[in-house]
Structures are given as structure tokens and as C-alpha cells.
Length: 194
Image 1 (tube, rainbow, N blue to C red):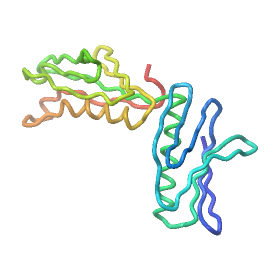
Image 2 (cartoon, one colour; image 1 turned 90 degrees about the horizontal axis):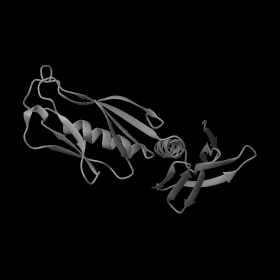
Image 3 (cartoon, rainbow, N blue to C red; image 1 turned 90 degrees about the vertical axis):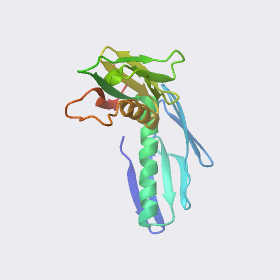
Image 4 (cartoon, one colour; image 1 turned 135 degrees about the horizontal axis):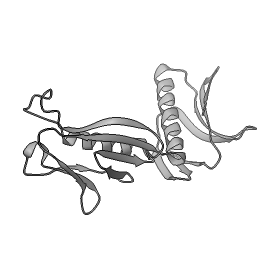
């Protein structure tokens, strides 16, 4: 997926091609991306930036335009381009993060809660009370032996859930070179991580 950037006399223009099977609707400040894996909706607003869909000979594309060529406007337009590309990748392929469960001193138990909205880590460094990490909505968490696979269509939600699980086992008051117990990120990428 390649995007093009044009700088005209009156401003800048970023264009992102829309692949087959993906439908993008722009209503006011809201961009809705629909694809085979689901739907993502997000608000984009910055003064002086305009988002619209256009039809070209090669196919449809999303165009981010501005009348200004200021550095800050150009940076925000680039950020919007990245967000929209990630939304397109999310609804077509998805994102995954793999985490490894490591324990040497105390065998910890990792399980999903009954409601399925959090991950529970019991017996971490011999603690009696389990540590809980929330799962952000729309994210799927699978436990496969000593590995946790976090997957979904929204890159920010998948990344936040993986970070929350990793931070749950952060060690305070112990030497991390000796007590290497914890849950650590080992792999991430595009797809569903199977």
C-alpha cells in the first residue's frame, strides 16, 4: 500500500489507496473503515486539514488536504495517513502480539477471568493475591501453554492490552537480573498470530 504526497502552490495533499473489499466512509470528523474482519471508527480533526474520499482511474482513495504547507500541519497529515493505513490493515489482516510466560522461582498460573474481560496472574513471586490486567474491548486473548497471543483489528487496543499484561508482572523491590519471572513481549506483527 503506497501513498503519495503532493505539494501544490496552495498546500499539501496526502492520498491513500483503498484496497478491494474495504469500504471507507467519512462523515464530518469521523472516519469509518469496514472490511472482512470488522469495522473500526475513529475521529480525526485538526484545524486546516480536510479528509475526503475520491474516485480515480486506479480506484478509490482517501485524500488528506490542507491549504497550508506549515511543518506542523504536514506532520499531523502524516500521522492521520499512518492511522488510516493501520485501520485498513486491521480490517483486512489484523494485528497480533505474542507474550512469553517466564518463571524460575515460583510457578505462576495465568488464566482468563470468568467474564473473559481480564487476565489473572496468580502466585507471581509467591504472592497470595492475584494480579489482574484488563482486556481492552474488541481484543481476543488466547493462552497457549507458556505463550499468550493477543490479537484484534484495532492496533492501539491490541498494543494496550499486551502492555497491560506485561506491566502486571513488573517487579518492584527485587533484583531483575536474579528474579527474571514475568510476562514478556517476544513477537508482534500483522495477521492473527496463529
